[in-house]
Image 1 (tube, helix red, strand yellow):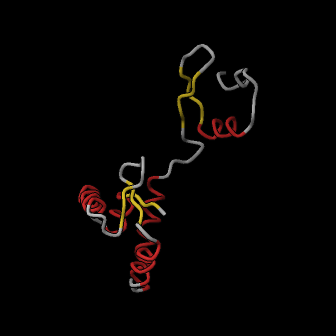
Image 2: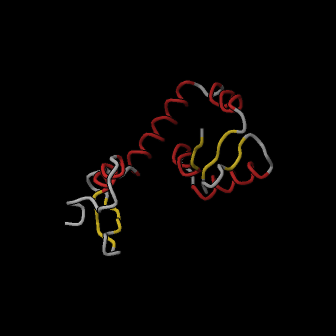
Length: 121
């Protein structure tokens, strides 16, 4: 399981730059965590037992508090599908704004070489 330094910072209510520096240092020293390959700012435990040990040694109320903080952070950073807009290429090579949920629907269904109708309207 990978986690972001930003989520850890939100859970601990500290500066994300400090958390990322700490995570980078621990990962560099190969203590408990490692940097996620190809995902800057994301880290994972080197072994599942490290994660289990760390979590199991938190008091239940502290576990609940961390869950609440991370949940609130996730809600605050979440983009609602109906509000998200992405740039999608048009047949003419220009970018057009397309709602994110529409892009996911298009990508989930196979289509021919033709540009799906209705996307660039």
